Image (cartoon, rainbow, N blue to C red; front, side, top):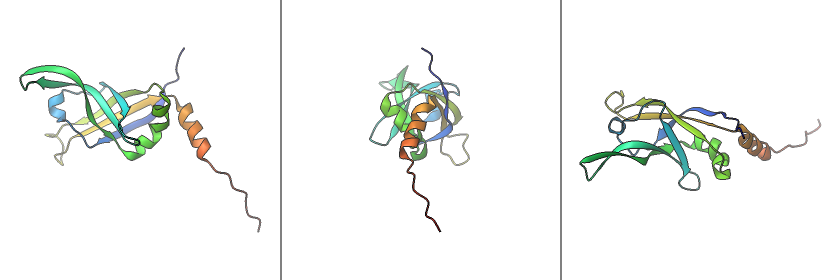
Length: 132
């Protein structure tokens, strides 16, 4: 069965990066994954270059950062339901190239918008108009 994949978030910046972006060998277009870490925090994971015992390089799945609160609110219903989400890295600025000295990582998240629309419609409360 084919799933409808439409952009849920075109570009979201990760907050609280836990890796040195320049050393991970991440590049634009790399696949990533999202996972629920806390009740309202979503972590972004990717396969990055790490060193075992500080000497031997290999690639492992590690958390690179957290989604911001606005992006988390958008995809939280899909993630809780277990929907398939496609996450790609769409923007990278390593520490040595950033004007502020802080690295930046942006991701794009694609999925089925039906879950988000159904949750948003459940939250809409209709009120009766007040007659003048």
